[in-house]
Amino acid sequence: MSARTSPLALRPDTVALHTIGADHERRLSTGVAELDRVLGGGLLAGSTTLLFGEPGVGKSTLALMSLRALAQGGAAVLLIGAEESAGQVAQRARRLGPVPQGLDVAITTSVADAMALIEQRRPEVCVIDSISAMSDEDLASVAGSVPQVRNAAERLCSLAKATGTALILVGHVTKDGELAGPRALEHLVDTVVRIEGDRYGTLRVVRALKHRFGPTGEVGLLEMVNEGLRDLPDTAMTLGGDVPDVPGVVFTVTNDGSRSFLVEVQALVASSSGSPRRVAHQVSSQRLSLMLAVLEARCDIDVSSSDVFSATAGGLAATEPGVDLALALAVASAAVGFSIPRSLVAVGEVGLAGELRAVSGLTRRVREAARLGATSAIVPAAGELDDVEGVEVARCSSLVEALAVSKSTPA
Ligand code: TYD
Ligand code: MG
Image 1 (cartoon, rainbow, N blue to C red):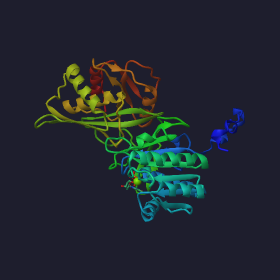
Image 2: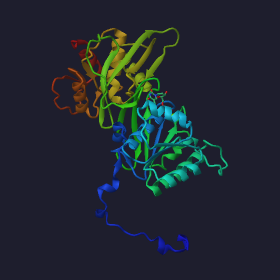
Image 3: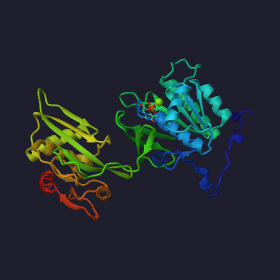
Image 4: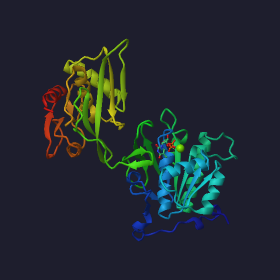
């Protein structure tokens, strides 16, 4: 008798919630501390995690590192590769260190084959690299199309639930930043993790965009080195040192998830040949335009006929409003030609009237700056701030005031 004709057989049993222990949610550590942090401790049995990012950012490396660590710890793992040969995967694995036993790989692009393998081997953790390359020959649409990718993800997801396998689906993004088709996967999976970073730089940020079983917005910081991705519990950057102060360089602290990161904001103002250029790398181009307008209107610093380049050093993006003040000061210092000491951090949002506006988590930011060697800080007059030892704080209500303070702060 089918379930459909017998509703009684379908009637679910109740369960007393207090009888379900916390071990029900045992998380498998991925062996990468910064990834575990983003996942809220690790992977949950039966859950599906979509790991996506641009080509070359390190998705395959991160996934393989996790499997390697899990295999080392005795977990049954399986890598289903759909884009590379076993030899290529082995080559990547060797870069990460000695290859442990039990790190098994199967090469296929067939969903049915992948499912059969999972059913047969019952791995605790399985990586599909990538979901974009998996297809079902019974479906009419071409491999890589949205229906194919969605079908593959749907079927693998339910199988993971049924077998208790923690599944990691690797996905690509197209150049416009959308998951190729798999944007449509977001609602299917339990967790969506993005790896961000400039593929030519070494810094990588991992971030949970969706998380059914834990926090979202938590970020992890990693560095791509010769032997894979290395955890960076803190930004490696420090203030001060022997580097001379130069115009156009201002430090700030940006808040991301529950963490604060020190960021060096740089600006260069150069005479323009032709129409003036505005370049913003790892800072918001919109906020840069705003700062240029405010500098001109409120501070009499006019760069309208010059090229303006702005960037963060070190590769960490800083696009939130709390970075405004550092960006504005960096441009002002580059345009006017004075330098701001490296022992100073500037934090605050700048409004259209040139006013400094309060930002979230100010105490946390100033503490992080102090820990890394800051001795002075320019912050908005508004907003709560606890005393932070070792940092002389100037509370300013406008950009004009902040500019004056930054010029008069001794190195
Ligand atoms: P990869 O994980 O293949 O990126 P994705 O799967 O996102 O396309 O790795 C991308 C780059 O990382 C590659 O150009 C080589 C580099 N890399 C290292 O620098 N160190 C390493 O240990 C590994 C494995 C890769
Ligand atoms: Mg890859």
